[in-house]
Each structure stands twice: as C-alpha cells, then as structure tokens.
Length: 478
Image (cartoon, rainbow, N blue to C red; front, side, top):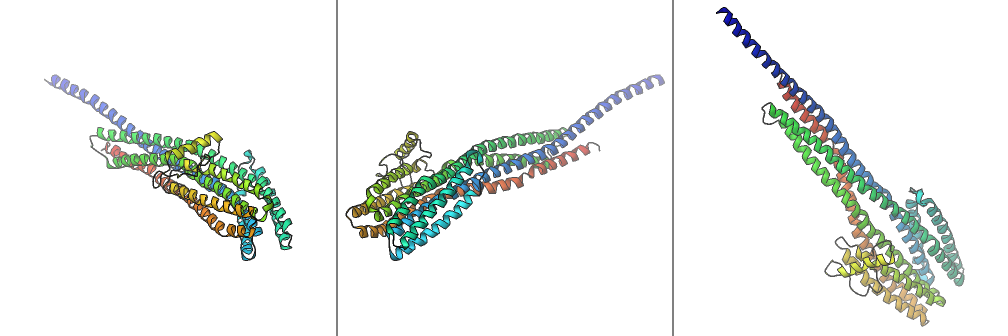
C-alpha cells in the first residue's frame, strides 16, 4: 500500500509542475506585451505631439509668408502706385485751377508724395526675391521716382514765376516719366511679389496636405496602440480601464479635429490668394486706371492744344477699365446683376472668356465674385463710372467750344464729386475682399496657436494610457 501511495503522490506532483511552469510562462508573455505597449504608448504619444505641433507651426509659417510678407509687400507696391498716380492727378488739378482750389491741390500733392514714399519704403525694405530680378526693379523704380519728382518740382517753380507754358511742358514730361518708367517699374515690383506669393501658396497647399496626412498616420497608430492596451486589459478579465479609454477618446477627437483644421487651412490658402487677394489687387489696378483718367480730364483743360490726343488717351484707359471690371467691349452698358447680390452667369462667363481670349493676368472682377456684397459693389461702380464718363464728355465738349473756365469749373466741381464717389466705390469693393482675406488668416493664426497647445495632449494621453496599463501589469504580481 505504501508503494502505491508514493506512486500516486509522485504523479500528482509531476502534473502540477508543468501547469505552474506554463502559467508562469503565459504571465511573462503578457507582462512583456504590456511593457511593450506601455513603451509604445509613451513613444508614439510623444511622436504624435511633435508631428501635430510641427504641422501647426508649418501651417502658421506658410500663412505668415503669404500674409505677413507677400501681401504686405504687394499691398505697399499697389498703394505706392496709387499714391504716385494721385500725386500726378493733384499736380494736373493744380495747373487747371486757381486760388483756394490750387492751394488744396498742392496740399493734396504733398500728402500723396509723402504717402508714396512711405508705401515704397514698406515694399522695398522686403527685397526677398533676387532670382526674379527684384533688386533691379527696385532700382529702376527708385530712379524713375527721382526723375519724376524733379520734373514736378520744375513744374511748380515755373508756375510760381508765371511761366505757365513751361509749367505745362514740365508736367507733361513728368507724366511721361510716370507712365513709361515709374508705373511699369512699380507694376514689375508688384508682379514679382505676386509671383512669389503664388509660389508660396502652391507650396503651402502641398505642405499642409502632407502634414495633415502625417498627423493622421501617427494618430491612427496611437489609437491602435490604445486598442491593443484595452485588449490586454480584457485578457486580464477586466472590462475596462478608464485611463486608457479616456486617452483613446481624446486621441480620436484630437486627430479628427486636426484633420478638419488642416484640411480647412489647405482649402483656405487657395481662397486667400486666388479669390480674396486677387480681388483686392484687381480693384486697386482698376483704381490706378481711374486715377489716370482723372489726370487726363485736368490735362485736357490746361493743355487744350492737344485736347484730342488727351481725349484719345482717356478712351484707351476706358477700354482698360472695361477689361479690368467686366471684360468685353461695351460690357458696362448692361447691369451685372441677376438678383439683389448675384452676378448674372452670362456676365461672369463673358468675363472669363475675355481673360482667355486676351491673356489677361487676372480674371475680370465680375468673373471672380465669391463673397457677400461684392456683386452689389461692382454694380454700383458700373453706375457711377457711367456718370463719370458723362462728366468727361461734357468737359471735352466745353474745351472744344473754347469754354475753358466752364470746363475747369466742371472738372473741379461735379467732376471731382463724381470721381470721389468712384473712389468710395473702389474702397468699398476692396474692403469686401479684404475682410474675407483678414478673416481667413486671423482664423488660421488663432487655430494654429490652439493646435500647437493641444499637441501636448497627445503625449499626455500616451502617458495616461501607459500609467493605466502599468497599474494593471503590476496587479499580475499579486
């Protein structure tokens, strides 16, 4: 009996030992897997945070290049051109008027030239594109501005000494310098800046999309790690671990939020440049053409001997105004609207077709309407411009009839009021697009700042999940 008992005891001991070794081995594997998941959670949490932070920094930097450098320089170049043309217009008014009106024109000329110098300084201090000859354009504009203001200075000097003929000749020479040298140089500077802005936009669109994909990849990987943690906890026969669950939910929400934010920033980069800023620059181009016409109205009055030539120049600018505003010849005769604030589809299509036919650098303004209030402003501009053309025709008729005093009074009276309305129209149209432009970059600046702060949530979530799983792992020792 003793022998039988010993044999049974020995068999029972042999059966328990393999079971214990197998259980210990399973425990080691589970603990090793948990340790790997804890390490992965910490590592990928940090990586996800770095990627999310860098994605927001890169988005901010691209927008800052477009807005803080590109648009500021282009705006300054556009305003410098407008101020220079306004100076020329004020000088022309100075020659056609007398008394108080002449003094006001002189004061306006002084202010316009001061504005030109300030805007030129802003644009030219940011010489950042030597590849496309920006420095050469700047030098040409600087020389032309110097020559122009010297000729205008001679005009004022001649006039003060009663040499009105020489004053008029000096002005016409200055106007030649303005139109053949200074305006083209400023236009070239604007074109270089716009080209760089377009290149920045194209690169930004790709870079933001790439960073968006990167945030999605690391977010998904971190989510999979958290799911693996939950499975490991379930293997321990626990239903849930709130630290891992909280980290999982937060990571999912933050990843989806970043996808939405970066996707919107990528889309808005096109709206910022192609829709909003193209309208800003286009309206300012139009305003420059209107300034040329305003100057020609005054030139016709004080230089009636060449009135026919100046009137032909006025008509040439009228054609350019049509091309910039709506495209085809005589497109200003009919309304732009099909509703209260909607451009007629036929008008928009005709504008786009004219751009393709003539190879215009920008779509005419009515073909690029996207924001509330734009259509109404362009229609108001059309109506006021037609009134301006009627005033011009009357001034020309008075000059042809030899009624120079009447023509001068009309130019500085009704003509000045009508032109002031045109300036108000262009300012209002610019502001509509400018408001959208500002809304976009201000929103992106704010959201990228928030995104950089929220990027810290990824490593915090990874740490929270790692802590939760580490506690469960330690419970296996009990």
